[in-house]
Length: 302
Image (tube, rainbow, N blue to C red; front, top):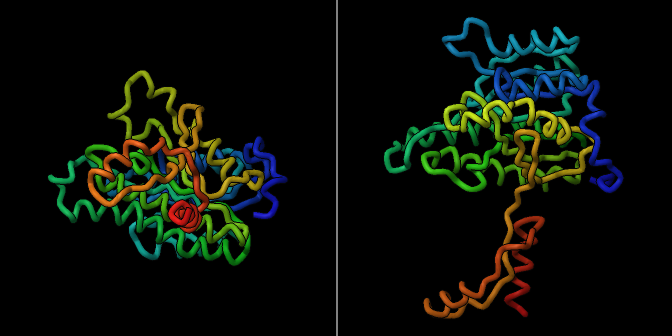
């Protein structure tokens, strides 16, 4: 975006008042924390969370009640992220209720606990369908809307598993890695049109992670500790685009694929093995796949 150099990265969402956001998976955990944080900063919200048959009170309704109790404005939606019409419905609801849309936070997702060799492809497909295609269902209409209005911010939940993988989470790792690739592409597509797209890999004590967290960390890893980072990412004062931030317990880190300088590979397996031993550690960033290819091709020509 043209004004990146003029923005102040230190502002934590102070320019959010009056804006409108969609937050999916917002009935509990991280999504609820994001919705409450934004509402506290004056954002009007579409709070999405699918209904469960065991719910005595719909979780999206409960969060809307919390927002209204603090003087904010919000409306509940119960669409399932796996529904291809979910994004269109949420966009329509935001426009009908508030007349605009500025922010999209794609937080809905599921995990699994299965080794790949023990997992059926139907089980694998279900996780990918919700985490990847559910994100695409949401972003396809909402990104297009922000693109046309030439302003907006999107944050999509990924995971450390999507960055580095994790045993027992093959579909979750694959889908969360795919989400990062999708967001990198949308960040490049949206940049000339005023739309920023970033991903966040949160560490927090939620229903999905609680059993795997050391007890000593559960209290410090509250969902609320991640929310200010998300509030900054969607604020106009934030310059970031195409980034993945790891956040948790009040800390933040940047994650980025890196590559090393190229060396001549040789023409035999022995020469390739020797070339591998000469490769330096990855230390180079790249703005896009094409930029990386041009740099790599340049090393071939030289």
